Length: 346
Image (tube, rainbow, N blue to C red; front, side, top):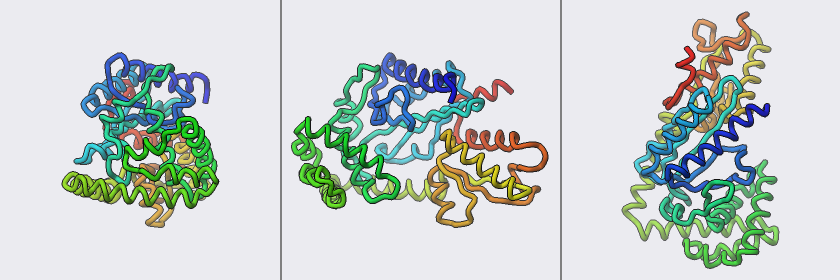
């Protein structure tokens, strides 16, 4: 990434937070702020529900002022009848440099699909970071880091991340010293005992203890809020049916490739899109489970077809650039465009 390209993302991030602060948008940055204004991941925020229109207007002004090719509003996660499950995903694209920036707005900290900490409580406890943004209270941040450790434990390929989270969480709670009281206030009274196993290196027992406490909390929450709980879980079921079966975020594309080398170049092109975060996954497999997984995660499923049926063709003598441009157009155009500099250019 060139300095100019890197500066586009960094400058946009700094100005985005400055404008939210100036215009009174209530938010709290959830994680991955250690290298601010570089994130390396999506920017995840809790945002006041009533401030979402203003938040989107700020994103639009930043996209236009900094010359991004397009800003889209992905509604796949924002259509739930339960506010707690809604996620507003704003995606900045720069076609020339293949730069991408995503900012996601959440409205609760969830545990097993239910609100462990609602939006209002998160925002009341947010803290100011001297670098120019509001972030999650450190006790909440590190409690959720413990829950993330339990979720990652035993999953292949997560060891480095797990160890990083473990080091941070144990360092924080050893100095904070109030884990037992804080966790009990959220309905997880035995979490401090589980952390003793984590500190001793017994991740398996830590995971077992945490999962048991989560299930107990879930049952108690439903018993305390039966009507609301049933509605939330019913909405959750509907959301999953719609998102993962009826209208996934990903899409299929019909591709003609003349030779095996052409197919390989197309797959390399897709891998490049993953490297820039334009997409999170792709497959040309016929395996139904794999195809479903890719669609659920907003990726692209490639179907090889004859030339007359193809949406995208590679290896026809026109070079690879037309195929690449068409795929980028499809990636951007699948969502509502808040602003699109490409239209003005045309």
